[in-house]
Image (cartoon, rainbow, N blue to C red; front, side, top):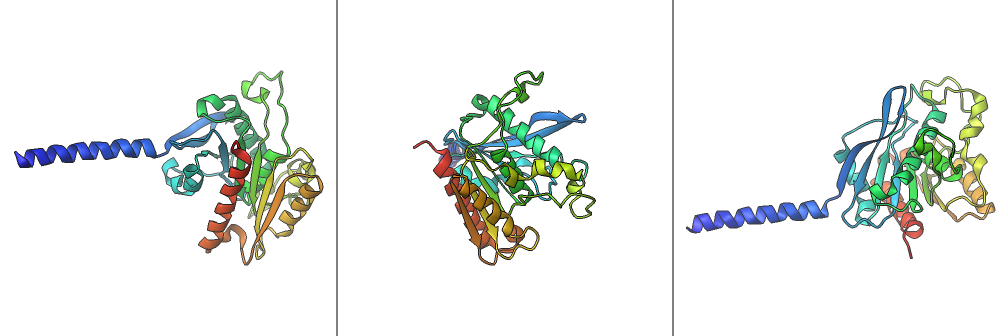
Length: 282
């Protein structure tokens, strides 16, 4: 009788713990299709915390404008700092290099923003409280989303493209901001192999204006791939335009803060605090 009672208690406890885990763990919705290109689906993963605060943050899955797929649960730890604060996270993939180039990637992630806004109720977010962040190419794309929005094409046959793009806050880590002079054949970055006359259309530095969203820039002063001058230039331009902006230098930080967990930790804390500051209702 005692053994049977113990077994019952153990079963009840296990079920209770499972229920608790289900109600406290983020809900992951993988591979949401936000469009198609050349017969292929463009997707993002959604991470919805149990304490969702109504604000959404898009993470740009992009390094060298290469955007790779991986199982959604593998990225959960990366997004924990945002999820803990109640942010719904969208991990956005774009048409990847080498097949697709920088202008393609910029158009893809803009479409993702429009799709999220169109389906904001479904995702439980406020379309007016969306932010984006990323590092390197991901930072570049985040800046393009924030600095080059438009109201959409009301005549488009594609419902997604009828709606507005634009963000309420941006965080860019070690981003290239001016691609003029960077285009042409490149073994290291095939995404840059596009006509030079298109470079201006994907150079965030050229889109700075007074109505841009609050923008945080984080860059290491030992970055030899994307010199810190990129962030310094666009920070100065944003400041001159009257845009709320901050620039944080990570002393000794290399590109990607490779091999230094402390640099990554600090950058993450700054990023989360920025989105708390500008995406949460007061």
